[in-house]
Length: 239
Image 1 (tube, rainbow, N blue to C red):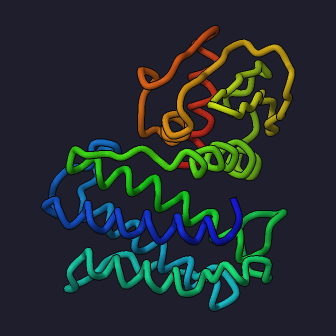
Image 2 (cartoon, rainbow, N blue to C red; image 1 turned 180 degrees about the horizontal axis):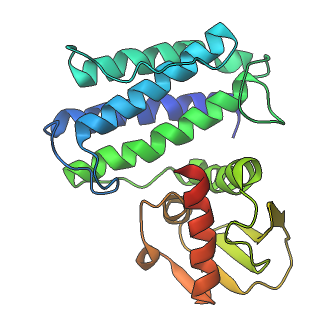
């Protein structure tokens, strides 16, 4: 995906999240995020959007979060923060330097991609609260799988976390990844015989990695234990 596509996705997902949140009472539970209400979800995503906006504009990670809407309407507060973020993330400037938490990508484009995925996953959460979840865009979801396996596991995998060295292949229409977790390292090993194969739509596989859908939404062949170990490792680095 190019920067403009990420910007379009961010805008569409931010709008859809707000629409869904407007349809649910603030105290309604979010089934995909146990223990969280719609109000909690809106405050979380709104605070992430504001944090990233300040991170970019100030040139360093802020020490504190603006985490609650206070007396403001929560969804209106969320929309204001999303609009500010979208204004800062100009796709024309995607290659411009920006502070990030990624060792190999210090550009504004990092945040365009990251915020598109962050907002899309939480849009699914908001829609789950109103019982009408639309799948992720297939192209965005393919990139989302790649982001989980390369960025999240690549940056945050702790030593010896669920590390057996056994390979899992994730397969979606037109694309597949084979990964094996070693001590502190995720090995991308295309062509290696896998101990398990997980297949499904790109939306289902991406949402499974993020813990939003279960194994029933996928086809799993081979060792279920190694599949669950991969999911547990992803949960450990994305929680």
